[in-house]
Amino acid sequence: MSDWIEKIPQAAREFIEGRRLDEVECVIADLPGIARGKAMPASKFAKQEYFHLPDSIFYQTITGDWGEAADEQEGFIERDMILRPDYSTASAAPWTADWTLQVIHDAFDRKGNAIPYAPRNVLKRVVALYKAQGWKPVVAPEMEFYLVARNLDPAKEIEPMMGRSGRPAAARQAYSMSAVDEFGPVIDDIYDFAEAQGLEIDGITQEGGAGQLEINLRHGDPVKLADEVFYFKRLIREAALRHNCFATFMAKPIENEPGSAMHIHHSVIDEQTGQNIFSGPQGGETDAFFNFLGGMQKYLPSVIAVMAPYVNSYRRYVKDHAAPINLEWGRDNRTTGIRVPLSRPESRRIENRIAGMDCNPYLGIAASLACGYLGLMNEEWPDKQFKGDAYEGEGEIPRVMGDALDLFEGATALHDVMGEEFARVYAIVKRTEYEEFLQVISPWERKHLLLNV
Image (cartoon, rainbow, N blue to C red; front, side, top):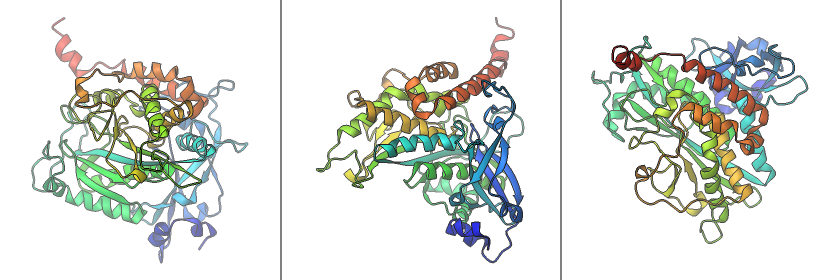
């Protein structure tokens, strides 16, 4: 075996044990979270310590257009980045025809500095700020998504997939085991792919939408969990394609159905004592707990553009549709934007219910942690706990992408945490996407305005 094989996780070694490794996919997440990179023969990968990719992959919009986000001094020259493998992320690609591994890479410039707008680097930067204070942030993401019928026509409405029974997936069957059974073959492949990749699933449940599922991941290191969400999105899509359906992570794919969220649970560990800083010696809630909550309430509006990165994302924030409309906080209350789940003192945590499943997992987790970090550092204090139905309160979340971008562009405190250069590039790319969307005439406009105004 090559030396690098000894550095990869056990699951990856077991996947290729006794077999000839054919190919290595060298991948990195761009701003939307799409896997970019190169596939190369395993023999060539073994001889290379790094490879190059142009930095322009971070200037590209979801439509393939380009934001004018290049270097302010040298312009758009598509400078090469140096991508180095993180061998701890090596994982099987079990859906391929040959024996293939995936390896996530980190991006650096020629001087060895981390590329500031590479999403994984943004998250590492935020985690490092916690570490500098002697803290270890812990997260647990929840992934919601839909299995839908194949859709080759963008003008056609998205429909639920056909279930095992030959009937379309039914809505409003949350937590139904028979509903989960409808997707049995797809779920079986999800489990098989996850096992081959060494990814641990804490549970799969049917959510409230037609064909909507949720996968929970065990809590752990933010970068590791973001890697897992990045990998899971790809494996779930591949599992769906095997069964003639699509998996979609759109925030709101089907009209009048609930949207898909990426809820993020947070706790913070004192690295010296190993104790959860949200709980005191007697098990009570600490000032740090309330400061983190206060940071969430104060700063989350400014990063909605990161957690809800597309125009479709804002269709999810609808009253009484399992998504928050404000930033109230409550204990065991799923109508609030910030929820404190039932837990023992040692596992006390805070759940951010704002992020959509369409966000880049590295950036969504980084933004959420950044809000909590600023709350801890500035000793922010939250509003009084909300009791009752938060949908009866006022909406406090931007309703359109343009408003969210305005808030993000003015959030200098958050820019300092996530990185000023990241904030500059992200805002330009997202503003380009938004302005492109505004040029599109929708079916609603043609239907209601063509002959009536």
